[in-house]
Each structure stands twice: as C-alpha cells, then as structure tokens.
Length: 53
Image 1: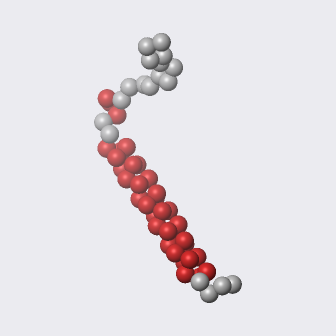
Image 2: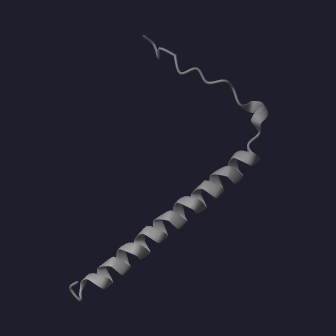
Image 3: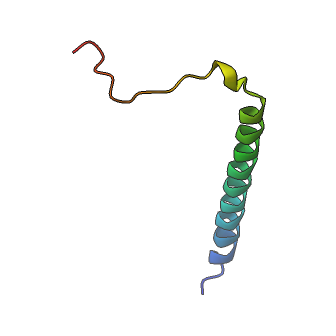
C-alpha cells in the first residue's frame, strides 16, 4: 500500500470513533432529560390532525 495511506486511514478511524462517541453521549443526555420530564403534563399526540384543511 502507498505510504501516505496509513495517516489517512488513521484520521478516518479517529473521526469515526469521535462521531460514535458523540452519538452515544447525546443518547445518554437525551435519556437523562426524558427521565426529568414532568410526564403529567404530556398529552397524547394525534398525527392525523389536518392543520386547517
């Protein structure tokens, strides 16, 4: 393989690992925020609303 390929592959691997880590971090943050929601104020959502039709 060409000598310049390894740094490029290493950079791509670092970027992929970073993106996966950020996604996992955001999932955990979202779950934590959902646990803190006052669920008594939630209402049932009806996707069949016609929005003024």
